[in-house]
Image (cartoon, rainbow, N blue to C red; front, side, top):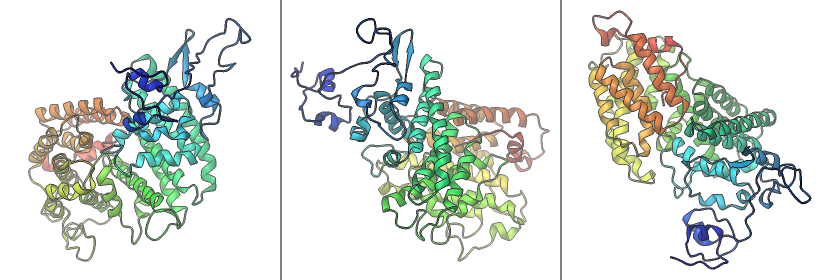
Length: 526
């Protein structure tokens, strides 16, 4: 057993490790990424009634519940009153708001003095956001990966009360979903609603004074609120925040080379482009199975010199969908076709000198996409070797995009002679490729849209069983309401489609996309 000196920090003493006794925090804790509890006396204040002394008859909330760590205003959003709201009392005993499966290790950035001023529960929510929520938002959420956009979000939250409250609210709702069915779940939900309400109240004031100084934090708040709608409700309310983001971008003069105002730092400019790329992807996938079309204003903010392709290439690297940019481009191009007079030439004409991705028929362009080349090209930009998983997810997206675009372009050889003729083979391809991605791999969560498309296309009972099994596993791994909603919507769709009269040529005549949109369900299949 390692014996510690009496001057060791409390963390090393609890862990029975040798402490280097560095000040203000030991280097061992900092190196290992755990919270150093320091060297002074540890005081634990609980909610209850004092039975003796000057505080007799008073509760600790009325008296001196606030510890030294929270006597100063920890942030623009969290003061002493908010700190008190982050713990609850049951029958006179203090119940800390701690979600068990939150990892015990914290990011090194949480040792920042700004964060050290906060109470334990607030820091716990921020740690949960950086780890658990972050694991759902991006592909590889590694502390060593630079730049980590989640850390940048946390840094910008020091400048905005609204953004700080959105982050804490999102973390609280995520813990509510993780602990659903347990006594602590409701507590997290209340905290999430309180912080979300505070954030919306602050945003309503901040957005009336839009300027380059608050553009980034307002855009970040809108982006996270759109994500939070999928986490909290899983319905179409995310569109409100995507629309707000589009109005923000239109409402300010941007530089000619980025989606940030002139004079902004390179880091902030890159961060703005990252946020817009996520909003574009969310808008695209959220509209794919919905009767409501995508927000064209958001896609049009990428004017000359910017290009929508740039946004999609930013997203393909770390967005949880991991959809190859070329496939996203083809999905967007196909989705725009019904807005024009669809003729043979509009689908299959040679587009020389136009879009570098779509140089000919959409189906031909999709067929020429090579998942192996894409996965290999991406490797120098990824923090880990994920070639195999990227290859499988890209192959699944390629097959799913072919099925989806087939539902958009009319089944008429005069319009397009290159559409796939064996949809069952494409369904098998999707199921085969996603089955080869381990459940524990970060890219497992990228399979939601392909599996939903496969489920909508197939009428085979065995294929449907495989789709449902995969969706149930995803609902366990990704505790978002949108994931659960996709599973429920697909089952309702099967009940609807199975009651329709059979067609002589079911695969060529059945327009399942029209039926799905006619249901009017709120589904986000990504």
